[in-house]
Length: 226
Length: 128
Image 1 (cartoon, each protein chain N blue to C red):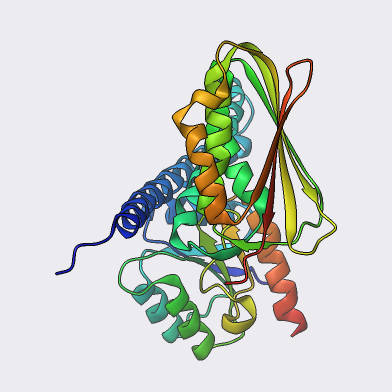
Image 2 (cartoon, rainbow over the protein chains, first blue to last red):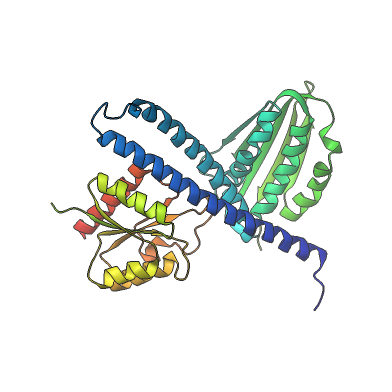
């Protein structure tokens, strides 16, 4: 058997991780669905019960919305996780850039919270889907966001916007980094990978730093022809 | 007016039975089965539901194959797919126009959303 070349090997390794993650998120969603229906049933039964029949009815009624709220939050995370995992199924496909970025932002929120970094996003409406590699775009996005998250020493702000461009089938992803940093984001190994990833995506990048120290990274992502 | 008959098909027994019970509380006549074979057997035995809530991923025969079988047997049965698939990713194989599912609902579903979808499916069925 011919040995796989390095790139193909890595591709399959990612696909394998993606499949396991997708399976896990499906299972989690099933468990959440059962918990949600079960707590919902308790709520239904309590509402059918004559008032004050059980001394704990009122307490149950207060506890149940907390469970429902947590299930909703966990389900949303699972959706992002599942979407993220399935991105690796189709290396080249037509996809929504805001959806792909939002999945990753959801998964990075915890790290942002720990770093006390505000992570904001806003997307232009009616953006056309882009034919490119969604998983690779998410990786490029990670290579910008992760070093930034690591470099903020205290309250910072990352604002991600996706804008329409006049040229068809192209969008601009703008990442603004505001706040004090204890080391330059450029030295991160993730950041060093970015040019190669963007080359594979056939994307363009510009990087500016204002006098106040705010960094702005702009990626122009276009649909690939093949 | 007679009660709307709903068949819940999901291999997660706890999910299927609890959902069916909650739908019954809301005035539907719901039954839960835990495999596609039982669902098709029930339908073939002339126990025709108005609406089927069908899990997409099940052992042996999956939801898409079952949907095709149900529609082949009786196109008037409306089918709502339940799926744990991620948002934002194309739902491979779920082509409503092609296979005839009324709608697709993400798990964990909201009971009120589900109730609305079932009633919408019934309106479509009555107007057909």
